[in-house]
Image (spheres, rainbow, N blue to C red):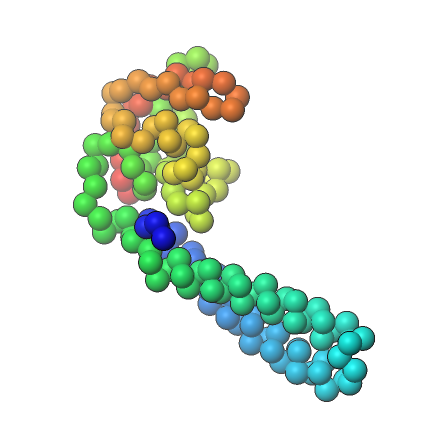
Length: 156
């Protein structure tokens, strides 16, 4: 299994999701027991739905526990703060349009493009990795090639 890197915020977000799923699991157990008491399980829609939902919840709980158990929190790692890495907030200028872009590179679990967080495995982030302030990069994206000037790299 490959290493899983998360920011502190990403780790906490997954912890909260895990707590919520465990709460849901307990509620589903109660619902399934109530449905079981109603009789014939083959034709009991509440029971069948409850078991399917419980299976989905248990699968996600297992995934999260595995990810959290092996996660390395990037905030605690010694990384070169002059280069673009996971957790970096990058301010750049699109040389084609002149637009200023600001993105924070995050894990896939915490990516939210509308909030300015992009996955470190996205094409844009892959093109930025290892670059430093003052450098210029060409990034191949599905929409075409972008020429970007990196104005600032910071870790918050």
